[in-house]
Image (cartoon, rainbow, N blue to C red; front, side, top):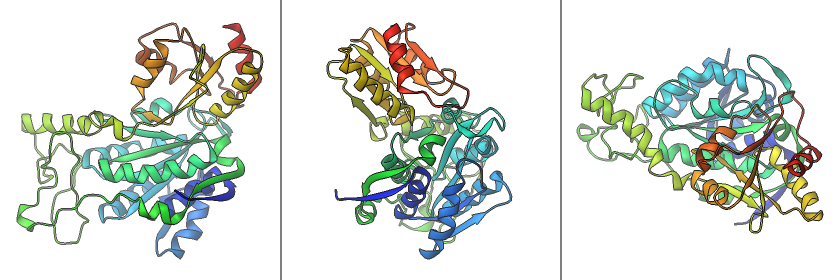
Length: 377
């Protein structure tokens, strides 16, 4: 794959990725530190024949995105933690009705309005279950400027493959970081677009929710000759509300299994100097950049540390995590929260002796702090 060199911020790259991935609609509301995504798209989408709308609030933003997705458009919304809280109900609707969309969350301090201009990673658990009910969320997390681009592109393809919302996490540091990135060419991105499935048979034979136990619904664009019902209630193969016991059970189990039984299609992670590591550092997002710098310092002092970085946060790469933690005694999870992913590492490793380095005051974790903590181990 050919690449191009750009100098940009993470937020700008996320917006650029959406356009290159075929997104034709943005609906949202400006919210620090994500606002630049909307600013860029308000200029670039109309040039491509698309639409960018600043709605009256975050709820209206995601409602408009669901509407655009229902008529077959790739659609994006972007926000930060408080906006995710407001979008939660409609994210649940999109999970139940199986509407594909992408939501970028540039994390800041919380809860509530928290620290709007400071960095945090406090939305990890929210991203696992942003709305009530049973379903399998898909959440990606960019750890470099280039990934602010590539993970948004990947999110659109995943959303159309699994017919559900896909969340992309950035954080304030990486969203506002300005630097050089090597990203795929627009032509390569366009060539790799995976379109959502369509039904092309007779209209009377179209049952959008009549699919295999581990496959998503096939929702043809509205107003193109195929009729079905759209609801957040439990529904039958036509989308009409039902309380029939077995139909309800199969529906919810399928929402789980369509992702759980195909996790290999979404799993992504990075391993840095893990081949001979005696100490395993687990970090994601902008924190992983500090972790890499700390590992270089530790290696220079003869301490064999390595980094495991989940890129797909949910579902977590649990099998790969356990493969390493079965062999390595000392494991350190580094997060800009009070330990939200730490619990998932304990679960995946089937161990309770996982150390943590956490920070929740809006300031980044420095390589020096990581080095100091590792030496304490």
